[in-house]
Length: 226
Ligand SMILES: [Zn+2]
Image: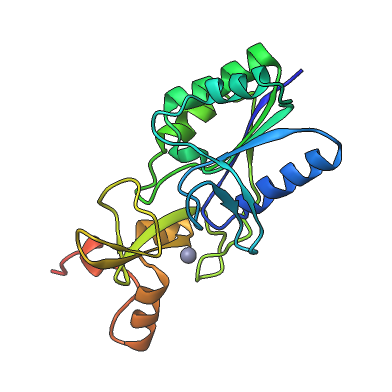
């Protein structure tokens, strides 16, 4: 019986590598699948990993109907045993519902991979719908570490070196933000340092200056004596 499985993690948890490996393992067993992705790091219609591996994929544009893509492939004589859906946090809730329908009505295995929450620690709509509908949600082992050495569980957006907690939900990293002409990057942090807005550059600056403690003193008022 086919299932909808959601593999959830943070930014640097190696989920695209796992997605590529899942595809390879299924093909090695003689199965045929379709790979979907959206806003992949290396551009449109490619699923790529940080290790440099890549494979062609169907780009999930805003109005793409995933159910229609699968049905069209099958009615033109193609075989579909499974779907690999990377960057699923960027899919719309409706597209996630289409995936559930593919599982239930066509008995096709669906493996979705995505980041759970955004740089404000709030769920992406696609990930929220996946958590709600998936037969299984599997948290990926976090391999990345915060600069302090703890497990990196939260994504931080860094604009010109400074961590921000406001802005558009989706801004692809390592690109110049045309509106602000600023360099946008992402960094994974532990929750403690995400809450304190302490990315690695802020920590370095604090360490270099003996006068500055690595948190905001205004947030912890000292009681007045006498
Ligand atoms: Zn930390």
